[in-house]
Length: 320
Image (cartoon, rainbow, N blue to C red):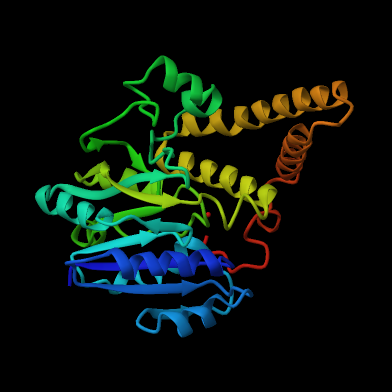
């Protein structure tokens, strides 16, 4: 078999059905199988899959295991040449998956690859990232990408050929099964974020390459199941994952500096946003939303970063 596609869903019923429709409609010339892992959705996702796509293998969890642990229910049993982890908020464009498979077939040292993600209007999203560093996380990442485009590549530049990158964004990650068996599966210390970054890091460390393939394109709603519904909890999980990544992949000095100064940066942002909110008499909704996120992030740090304040509340942590 060429490919195993794994789609993890949590309360994204309509998006999931659109995603599955695009998979079965547009993938041609490949021998593939689709697994849908439902993380205890209460919106009828599992029932809709059974009714509309009975050919998909459906796994229904009794609780929200998180993205990483849900994927790991399937990954150890993959026997195809490749595995593709596909977000439920994506829609394939004809030829996208075939382009990724073809590229990896022609480049046996590539362990992981990802396509170009597009917004609904066709504009580009970030499809790859640098590994987090003290510079990128304590300074202004956007400014670094403008000042040092070679060191910090971004969607601002048009790429016409596949590009070796530090890490791919995991809305559609295609992984070589042979490489996956060697480097291991997704790290369950992460609950939601930076699992793709950590996996990419382990690929490079094991001698495999990670590539962005611009010729392959898919639509990605982006955060439909997270930031639009529960922004504060989502940001908490992002911060937690970043701390875990530094602890696992950086030296002790870098981890300590990051652990000390990232909350300082957060506190400064909170104070500046508070001042701006006062000056605008609280009428700016964008500032109010930012203030709320900063407030809860600061409170989470003051409470020593408890799990229950993030997305892991009520979930079996496989643990990010």
